[in-house]
Image 1 (cartoon, one colour):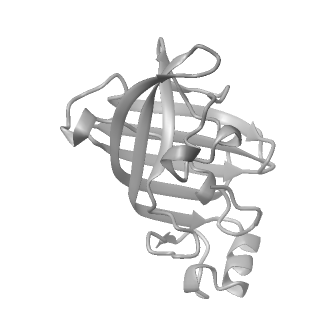
Image 2 (cartoon, rainbow, N blue to C red; image 1 turned 90 degrees about the horizontal axis):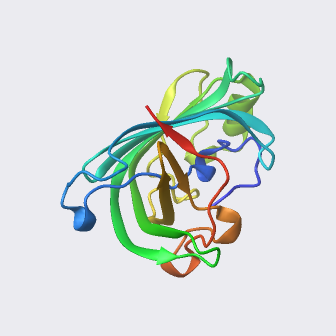
Length: 193
């Protein structure tokens, strides 16, 4: 679920569909248990650099991301923090022949911090999430922002190759429903820490 509004809490709706835990929510450890990171990379569609990391414990996950104008990601324009639950489903084979697992992710809490003045002004002027009191470098809970539908379950896929985790490419299924689960993997990957 991508947003075309470059200044509307950018990146929130482009969060990767990450996480996993015990099948059926049992809390069992899986190959994704632990901490993972995607280093500073450029997102052509969103025209920004960013970093992402997540941690898995049982059937819970915590995700953090930031967006920057700089190729070293040193000065963030915004950051996002998300926590939720997840469920690993059955294996499926992609048209490419790669075997992946289904992954259902349900965010419970989503927080945003805007660090660029123009993002604060834009979101205040547009009363983003019903708020006109956005402040620079102040974390805001946007979990209940109906306009962004942030806590809807996202349907993804993943595979592990060594110490690297690959997730579904939203250009080949946006993950908004079981029938729109991605059918290809992204080239970018998260490395296990």
